[in-house]
Length: 113
Image 1: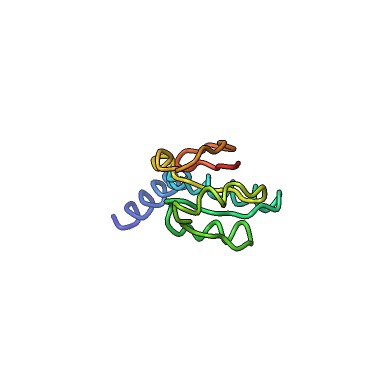
Image 2 (image 1 turned 45 degrees about the vertical axis):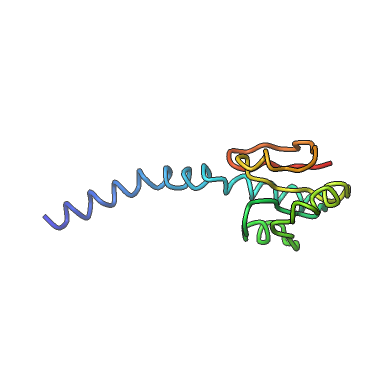
């Protein structure tokens, strides 16, 4: 009986493994990884607005990240050509100035001048 439970759980875990990884990407982690690698490849500075601290940006870019820039500094930060800003999609309406959407993912948006 115990062996059948172990085999059943092993088989179930094997099938569920791919769904669990896919679920992680659906929560926006894949977006952050892609944006961090894009910034690293193009030597851009990463800033975030209304996202909280997302440490995967530090890990995958290998650069300093400015988290949650204040609304009053947004226009100055976005005007610099070497800066990109990551915003949650649902917070895109709070962006105080017009910006160009460089990339759009499931949960996050990458903005530039």
